[in-house]
Image 1 (spheres, rainbow, N blue to C red):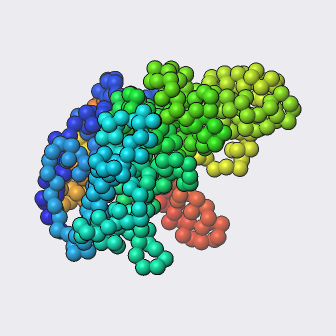
Image 2: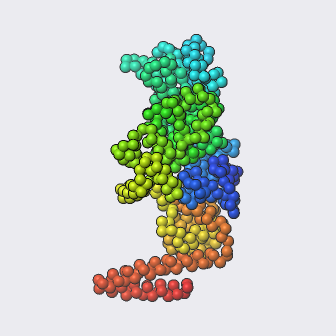
Image 3: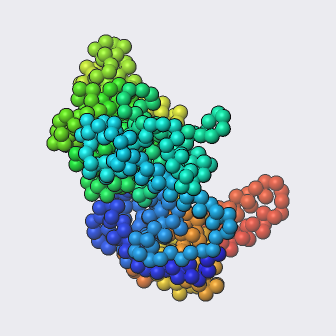
Length: 595
């Protein structure tokens, strides 16, 4: 086990060395407004900035989606990692050594197994690369790549290789080097025979290493040279290789996606390689599967803007529609790059070049326009049946537009394009929205830390008091002498104040950087809001005013509860109602004294 004091010192060092403004600005453009810095939230789609950072406090908070916390919480959310992993990530970025904890025998064994899997993938990558570039076996691969405009530099950049012919070239070479058949089976480089033994999975194919974001080879995509099936053969699922979560090329493209503020996603490895070869560096590819929510979430760590550039055939356009839905539901801003003449990205850029492709990017269609384009090229909307089909297709898309001005503009355009009455389209849209509201639960759920009745006076008072205690821990005794923890209306305010009281009783700091690990997620988010929202409130009289607000609200609530109980007991003929009346009189007297 790692000593707690040693770990806490490590966390303190990483935290004190971290500039939250610098960290968040590397992901989100921020502008200073007053004491805070503001930008569009990276965790949900918005046009008006509601994401706020207070550098000198070390907190961020979004007033739109209600996410908040310190620098480690931000990293855990944006990188989709745990809080502890976020601390280690930031430590690595700051070149602060991470203290090692003593591992069990089972943990050490597991870590060694994973290390060996990575090692075997690196060995296989070198084996295939050498086969392509240094042996006669690779000549057909070199000829194929040259025909596709892929030169030596691109081969080296993407570590491309070639799987030699024969059933056991790789397995024989690896077994001679001490790699067991069991490990080769585990990483999917060989396939078990029905009889004894195994054979190489990849033979006479261009080998494309799949590299994760940390630059580690985790699997392979293999492209057949001529006709045949399957056209592409991927590594099977392994402890390292999960197609739903990986994106080809992201290890190289990530920094360019951040710089250019959008990502281009294509269907195939060769599409991504061809575009990158022609200077389009912010491009990634899915791994032979439909675009997934996991891939989208990973891509959105780099930019919320995603441009889809799938094949222009029917299958590619169907895949685009499906991918757009997934990306929109994940909060991405989406566009579609249209390719002419039934081309795929690889064919287009090889024939027309990067300048022509840049023009296609400039003309990329947004979410609504692409669906309208799809209708006009796939549905015979001149007929009545066609118009009904077209409207049925476009209504869910149009209903997803929340901005009234934008929705109105698209309604007019769609009605004109399809040759239907605008009033009829609006009526159908209203009917669709009513039915959707009736039958479906809301897609976006409010964070539990949000007071659904609005920012009433009691909640506002609670937020101010928590902010005050955070900055001036010595006033905690005064606060607890004025109100009890139970008087706070918000459950997360009660949790935060209870935490503060326990820490004070143990002579431990209240404003602890490890708060995200000590409070519930919801309470930690609410604390962030308390600090960010009340940054500028410094009136000395506010504390007493807000304590009075909370106490009076609690007394009024108690008055209502005891009144109801007194009425109920009196109806039952229970003399206990007299005791309740005495309590009601006491509460009334206390309210008069407070007022």
